Image (cartoon, rainbow, N blue to C red; front, side, top):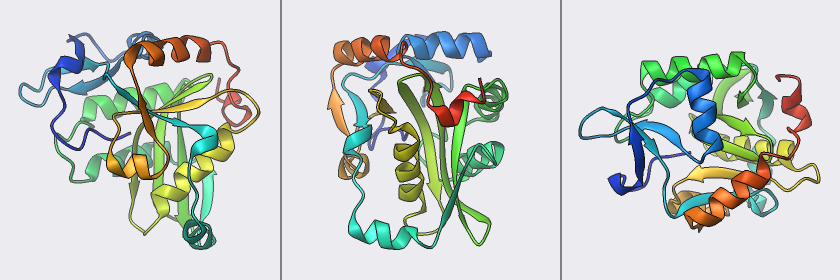
Length: 213
């Protein structure tokens, strides 16, 4: 969901190059890889962090203060995918990994029904959201943003509710950061992640996303 708090360890790069066509991206995700440019060279890297940050759906923390704050907002699903990716790309983050090519690739995945967004609105204005790729029982979160306090946390809470349907699911947040850890994320090693990913591929898509398949 975010790059690591410090510069990414290039030992987590499993490959370089290739294209960003839908088939390439989906094959990568099904094998535990995701694309992000390598900061020093700008070459596209295919990353498989070890350890891997994950959020168990039933462990996502919702504080009392967040519950109060959330009353200000409304949430939607897949209504403004392009805008969510664009606003994530505009945030001043190290590496600026959401390049125009990556943005176009995920917009196409969304058009095909594989990538999804959760939007948070205040008086109908988009003030927060997240997007990622759904692989049945695994939601590979790519990025989130907010322009109002707590809006990105509300997006994550809404995602939890979308995924909490009785099936075993997890949110892949790639690297564990202090912020994500405060929301309930933890780290597992690569072997465990790949085993859980394999099991997750057999889980039905969440009902909220099935209409996009």
